Length: 199
Image 1 (tube, rainbow, N blue to C red):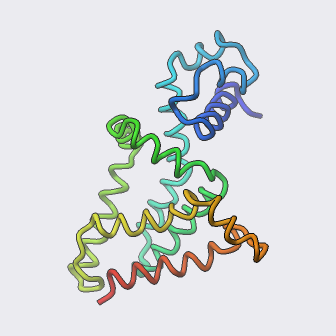
Image 2 (image 1 turned 45 degrees about the vertical axis):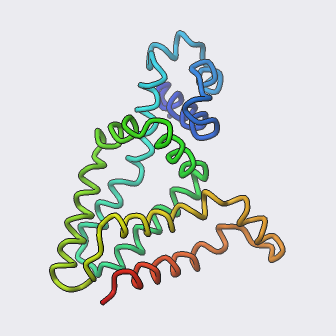
C-alpha cells in the first residue's frame, strides 16, 4: 500500500515534469496529492527539498541498473545497447523527463549537479570514464575525447523524446508513433557510436 510520503513524491513528480520547477508550487503539489498544505509541510517544508526528493527518486530508478551493466564483462558496444534500452524505457514512461532535465540544467546547473552528485551520479560518470580509458588503452576503441563520446550518446538518446511532437507529426502518415521506431533508432545510435569509436 502506498504511504503518504510516496503519494506526495508521485504527485510532486507529476507536477515538476508537467510544469517544471519554476511553475510548480507547494499548493499545486498538495492539491494533486489530495492533502492540505499543512500535511505537505510536515513531510517537505520547502519546494527545494521536494525537488531533491523527486529528482533523487527519478535517478535512482535507473542508475543502479546502468551501474550493473557497466560492471558486466561484455563487449563495449553491447553495454551501449543495454544502456540505451534502459534510457528508452525510462523516457517512454516519463516522456517529459528529458525536457525537464534540460530546463533544470538551464535554470540552475549548479543545483541539479549537486543533487545528482549527492545520489551517486559522480560515481556513474567516473565508471564510464574508467571503462572508456580501459577500452582505449587496450586498443578496442579509438582515442576520442570523453566529451565527444558523451555528447554523441546523450544527444542521440534524448533527442527523439525532446522532439516527440514533430517526429510523431511526420510519422502520422505511416500510422506510426515514436515508440514504433525506437528499435530502429537504437541501431542508428550504435552505428554512430561505432563510426566515432571503432578502429
